[in-house]
Length: 234
Image (cartoon, rainbow, N blue to C red; front, side, top):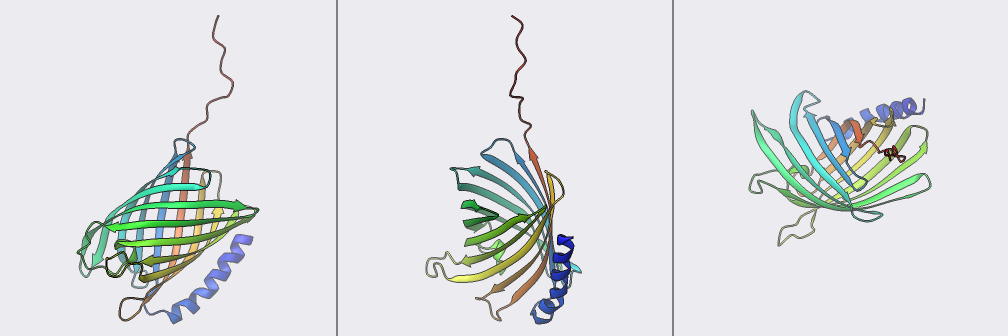
């Protein structure tokens, strides 16, 4: 019931966002699969497609391959490789990027928060690209999540993209704000619905993106060995 109310509220505000947008409506959908071989390591693969032109055209298609390591109690190190293609006029062109990141995560009561910094490198830096997800940049993100509702988590985040070039270091390029609702299906499966607003402040004209987010997450954990072992025959 709570999830249905939140979805209705989000859908109610979508026309208001759409009427104010400079670009057409977009949608990003992904399937995130993660595996935790140990308590410190998490491996993942996440295919994603992105639509634009009022959800009628495939804009991006790619897969993220990632690894996260729990360095200390609240600190995490990560590396992610993205491989895919971008729709450029009447053809698709390859796009790749590499990310290296560090994050601090903690929880206080029903609230969990995370601060993350990622250095992102485009494999083809000479290619003309205004997509914040495929350029060389520094990304800093702050995220807050409320977990006090049964089976439903509410979250929001703000992310800043800063230039890393020699003569324009840390110049703000893009900002991104996301609000989302996560629904747990069971221990291993969950779905998420969200909305993203993004503004590129260095391009002319300064454009804003308004994107509906749909996600399905699957988590696999290594089966724990029984604490009690079978006694050996003496």
